[in-house]
Length: 418
Image (cartoon, rainbow, N blue to C red; front, side, top):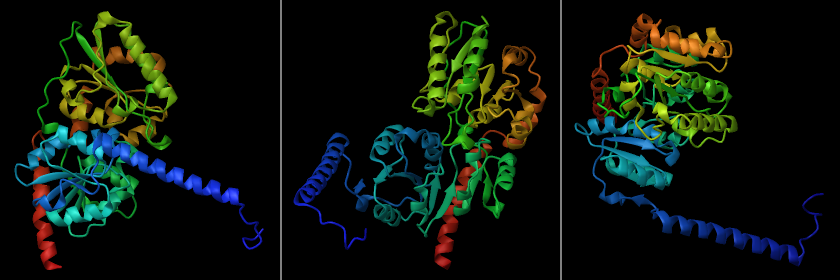
């Protein structure tokens, strides 16, 4: 039926629609009022934009509080850069802003609106903008034309999410080493690898306070699974497939203390199988109080490594950080796809570790024992560490600072000459 011949709405239809619009608007206003009254969200800026001084370097973070782990790991590095150049953080979520202000000495600016973001950038005369993830709202910041844009990501891993066509949008992409360069060459077409800047992992230069209590048992094994990702291609977790078997095998040993440290997003996952495995592992550990097992969910994982004799983990940044900081300690990896050839291609570290998959999980107890007692891949790990990172501790921080300083200086030259 055409709109011309459609029956006219009755009086009661019009009343119902009008009432519905009123209720929707009232609900929206009520929600906004509650939000402002509870958390005090500013309308435009915080602090007032006209009070902002010059900040040549800004770290942009548009995500909600559940993703703040992505930028938290960069805060100490950026605080070190701030000893040489003024640095601040820009956020788009008020709850995130409040949380980050408690976590860093850096100024944290907030604006929800895109126009507000442009205003901040102009006011502080930003020269270099740093991005710690591949968030979709990064593109709202990338429209700013008078700064250089530098992507640093929030870890070094072999996950497919580490390489995105978003890399083509940034002036520079900071990577850890040769493995990351090869990862970009494999994954992207028509990508200029000259954009890649090798800086290692500046976070790994930091001195982190030890986070594990003394152990009554002679061995400590950490099980550090990742989360299940945004889609199947980004799912590398072992929790739902092998997690309980791994923990049960470790619990059979009376010489091992277990440290269970899952990815932060495991704690809030809506993946039922992962959540169920997580609960079961927690139950098993709590049922063995004599083992002194630890579940340090809120601890900085880098501070836990020194006390660990063996790491069991998935394809994620955890294994590579451990490889860098503790090359003398063995690593056991997992592969939920049971594809040994594909795993070694996409994750070279697999050539320097035993792998738990569907074909080997039945022998997981023997695999763990072999690595604890004999460490069969010790020699291979040394070369693999160089492949992923390539230089000594301390060099990463120097390279990163040099990059940021160069970008700030070069931006001025580029603007003057345009």
